[in-house]
Picture 1 (cartoon, helix red, strand yellow):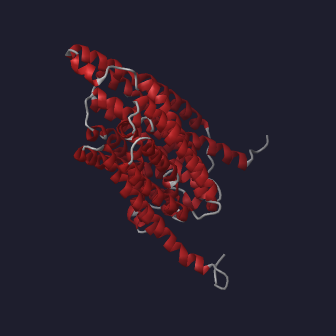
Picture 2 (cartoon, rainbow, N blue to C red):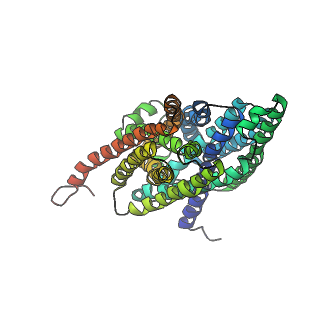
Picture 3 (cartoon, rainbow, N blue to C red):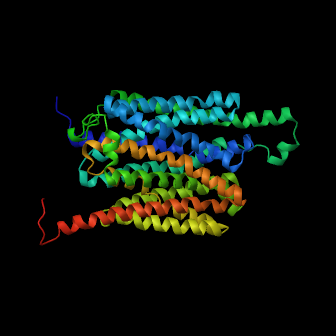
Length: 433
């Protein structure tokens, strides 16, 4: 019996982990479909509909540290299996949520899904960075995240046709009796059952593969149990790259959620398009731009330092947010599609730059950066508050504009720290190789 080629083992492991990136990207990008769907079903304001994002991203805050401890105790693979189990359970909870037709139950189901995603992301992101040569870690993570970006394209297109059913208009609903209105809304609420049942079945199939799969072990210095638990959080936060990455990731995820989650509402207000047409713009437009940005960024990082590229992309995104606030028609949609392109590399690049050379603090640093995803629960509320207060949803783009400026600050800080290191290794200087 011949021993399996280590390269082939690494490649298959990379493929399987990448499938997780696609699946959590897919379910996350059904949220922009759920927001207008639930907003209509429960007559919500923009701020109230933002609770969909809050339910999802609060889970990241609650579960990130327990996920890190789980990795520490059980290892990356067992943690991923636990994450997949929670993911499938949350998807199945959409069936009773639709049957009871209670908004809080939908939020609960989303919270359980997000708990599973937190565990998956806390394990999969650092595992990908460690699955190969360290100098290629940022490119490797961006490549895996590119398939997350592919889900950004496909989820809104599929979700709009399966969830945004052609129901009664708001005016028609107001004219109905209470019993007739309730029957119509119940039928619309039931449209989520099929898609989320299918997601649960796919996740259970992936979990079965992971149960029998033997993932390659990473270097001993980076194993999650290599550092004692006591004081691990403060020790990780004493590392400036991790501390700054936590801040930057908080604001970046908030920006991404604002841009994607409110796109369908934004497109209707700024460009006057229907919800299904807006979902197509979200998928084919923003989703394709996001994927293209990821692949383009991965290629450009061969020639441009990741931090320098991140700085340029963050400033471009901030400028396009200003355009989105004050333009109308197709120009407004083009601006938001442009934001999707430029923000595409931000999550994996911030993550990789944050935990680079973290050694025994890699697992806890990963947990803290994943914990910062709670920004996706906070910043959409600011977006909704600004939109409701000004009676103009476009002005809500002031929130992501601020976020991208924080990401630019992070990138600039990384570049400043890199300058002394570059000077130390320049010709004529003494350096350790």
